[in-house]
Length: 426
Image 1 (cartoon, rainbow, N blue to C red):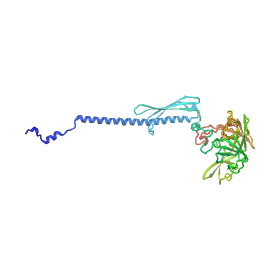
Image 2: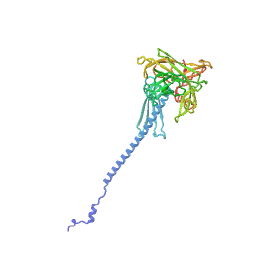
Image 3: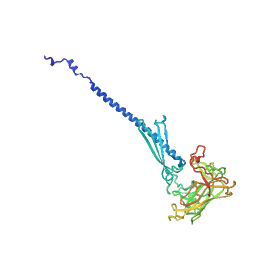
């Protein structure tokens, strides 16, 4: 037997066993190392990207705040170029220093262009920045939201189903119309088209001791094309007078509207009445209303009410305009939409008291932001044409409009109401 042909079994198994060589171990280690290094690098890049995102958000907030602070400026001269540094703060998500550079340049008339750039360095030392540009117009802060107000066309109907040109005192008739008496002593009632807000008819002989007027009360009606001029006359007889809260009892007066550049189909008709504000329950809801000073809860068809202390004169003037310059109306047209224009001057007529500069006389002021000295070529209804009566030896109040105010100032000033008045007539 050839010994080479028969090897012991244990020798065969020993030769079949195999280990890991040094080269293979080094290669495996290299692969694992490369993978770990890639993972570490990916994690570092992800963290850097996350940091930059947080820093960019903080930088954008700083730039927006800088611009919004400029929008609150009361004068264009206060909007100037400037540089400042915002130091790192542990309370913020971005722990870096921000450099804020504001560049202001003149733009169109009464406006400036503002560019705010925020620079910083991220954790890798790379420079980062965000920039915002805005146009600042020369207008009071109270009016900065004006562009967000939708333009109201002549036939746009608001949510309450009536044009904003129709006064709140007008009573809905339930058929797309509303009716108003210029004061409770008059028997003429004027009918409004709810959609356009224009006066379409005048009805005579309407006598009501309650606030409700129904269609059946309207007779002897004449078609007209008219608009309304309305507002309030308030009284502040203290020294100095308070234009924000004029709460003194009103004096008897009348309003007269003298038309010019005629001829006109008929004279303007005005009514003025002393009013008070009350609060009452109706249909389970708390309501607030201005009612005639002589009104009682029973005349208003409610059980009881609470007087709120507000007293003033409410006035309304109806104007049937002349034919427009474009020839699109006649001034005595057949309903809503007829174009009719007017010009004229409104005056206040005292009853039992006098205008003058003495302490025993009185002076009339108009709210400058609301009421015109005279009216020219008017074709729409005008509301809030308000006046203030003060003692004759006092000046018309001229508080600064649009003050940012503090908690001690009046509510009107805090809400940016322009309460400045001027003598009327000037």
